[in-house]
Length: 37
Image (cartoon, rainbow, N blue to C red; front, side):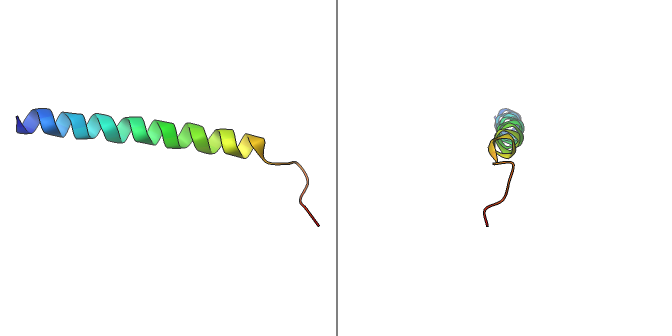
């Protein structure tokens, strides 16, 4: 049971990290090319 729980937590951490990195990359790609004045 404990091993199962640890595996689920690790899987969630990996999935969240992948989501975060892909979302960050997507948002950075959406930035306007010029800054507002």
